Image (tube, rainbow, N blue to C red; front, top):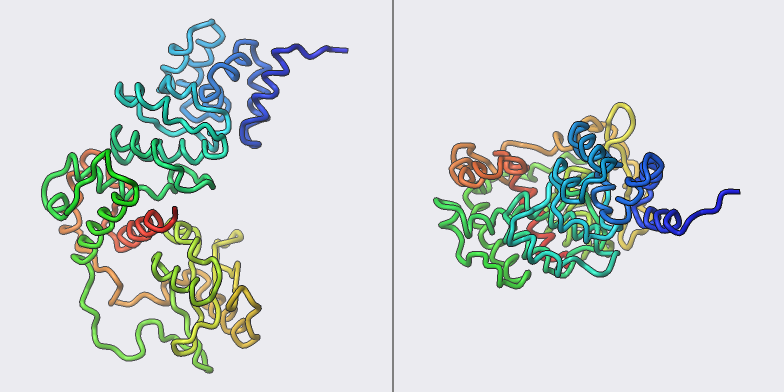
Length: 378
């Protein structure tokens, strides 16, 4: 019978602290070499990056070679571009795959004191800091690292709703031109989170006004594709719309703003006249990638009457390939002029890229939805 050593028990316990999906790969990693097992104890983030193939094979392979050769932690981290402050971060922080992390000298000196002591916040915290460093700068990432965790439930780095705040902070300190000129109260590292989000929202609202058309005169409106009994579908795209629906209908649809902003689902209000009868969530599913109803709830999450259910089902079947197309008209909420949009955001894009800032109405909708989530999600 093999007797488990003290070190083997320690490694097994350390692996149990990682997310469930990574544990098998970490156990396999530990079995390849005693030094790789030691790495799980001494530098959890580096072991996780290797086990989950977070970086290209050449960089990962070089890191493994250095581990087996007995190199120091700094030498092991170098091929993968991992900052040394990451070795202080607990195993609970790591999920999915590691993304780029800030590593400036000032950041490295100050970040250790801002790593959360509660492991429950660690994963959320790390993804927020990672996104803040990518979309902002080291000062902004340090500021985010010191905030009370905005949300306990972790989300992947690419769904962290920090972009509007990061862009506002960047223009406050780096930008020039029209977008910077619209900032009434520039971001500073001494700001409280609530103060910064309020100032950011004023700035973003000023930008939105430049692309909001004058509402045309019209009859029943673009959302007037009605059933024979007068039912209609109204899309809910923004934080205020979702919060109002949740308030009137007495359910939690307001918490879905980040999912709507990320394009993971579509939310509609089923109405007769101005009376709200039901709230519907639809998502893509199946090999055809067609939309189907995931939830259809009446007031207080009650069951909906049969006519409402039948209408919702037939409506989704009719527009299952692209429900949003049924509701689009030439009077969209925002009309984006690409030249004007590029003139606003070119200084930031030159430094950080256009990801998330494409010149479409969807980009502005998402920025506003994320801004609303930041303002009300704490």
